[in-house]
Amino acid sequence: EHVLRGNRDNYQKSDIQVARMAEFQGQGLVNSHGDTWLRQRRLLAHGFRPSYLATLLPLQQGVLHDLMAGFECDVQRGPVDIHQQMVRFTLRLVGRALFGRSLTDAELQQIGDAIAEIQAFILRQVVQPYKRRWFRLTGEYARYQRIRVAADTLVLRHIQERLNHDGGGHDFLRLLMESTYHDTGERMSQAQVLIESLQLMVAGNETSSNALTWIFYLLARHPRYIRELRNEVESVIGDQPIDYHNLHQLSGTRRVIDEALRLYPPFWTIDRIALHDDDIAGIHIPAGTLVMPYIYGTHRNPGHWRDAETFDPGRFEPEQSHTRHPFAYIPFGGGPRVCIGNNMAVMQILLIVATFVRTYDFRLTQDLPIATRPRMLLRPAGAVSMTFRRAS
Image 1 (cartoon, rainbow, N blue to C red):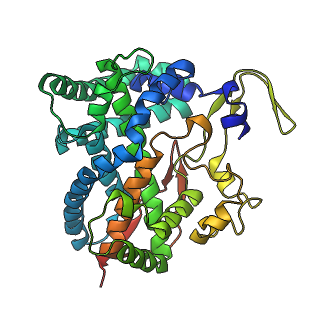
Image 2 (cartoon, helix red, strand yellow):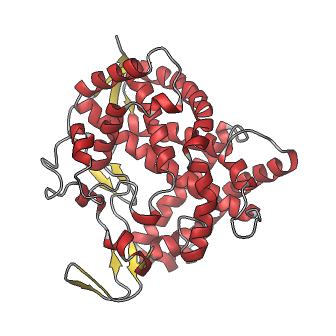
Image 3 (cartoon, one colour):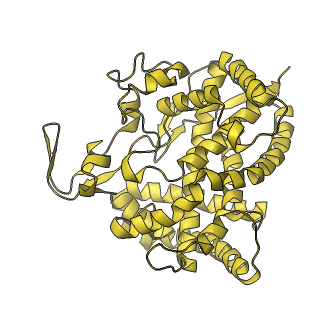
């Protein structure tokens, strides 16, 4: 709380995001600071209001319907890796929310593949900084820059086509292109629209796919909650179409999601650099120190969570949540820089989970614990193989 809110002006994002990621993603909301960050945040916030997300939901449902048809074919052939499936699901859902129907599935896949390759290379530079000069000398750095340029060119072409032909529709690209800054009344440049749209795609796709993987894993290990969630969906929604209002009335489903995010937060830690000397709880923090708010550890701290290692969605009943320290549960970060897309992520996760429990019973092919692989995000170590059958 001290780093993310109380003395937040003394802590900014580290070289990992400010320098390493900016080489491939540019400087946008995610890796800017001060007035630049605040200006971008105010503009982008328009796209994450509940009223705007409600207009996106029908498009998301259409995309999910098509994805479910393909998923049904996959599960008929045998077990599936739910992590790979969720990467595919969230790529399409986030991509359509950002770009509408203007990009084809093949183009979205090209962008998604480029992002995955570049993110892996950025991680190599972070964990092996002594190789950075070698990467440049061997041409490897230049190769990934070419991958970036190809993806950027593709997206920029669609931005220019939208400008020239007024493609219409409700998506984030339209909002980014048409919204104006509060202080000047000017619109964002094409270059900045490109940066913000791709940063949103990186953040939205990876976090949601990992979150959903762990949700399905925990549900498969605790199948009674699959039945409970199905009953809730039938009670709250029944035969009615899903809309933004009834989706957010699925309180039991939301508690399962919250508990999964407690145990397996996609952002398991956050990086900050102290700009000036500071003291936290009697510990002296010299200027320049890398400080890592440890979300995974906070979420499993027995001082705040009874039976902290146990999967128990009941701990998110209102009477328990109201008495808990506000920074004991921060899957989307905390303070002013809390994830701007958290409402959209929750909407998409609720939609996918409700659709799946309505349709399928599922289990792990081997009922064994799945280890974590903490990289930039908290991934599963290996495939998460599961079988699905139609709910009776």
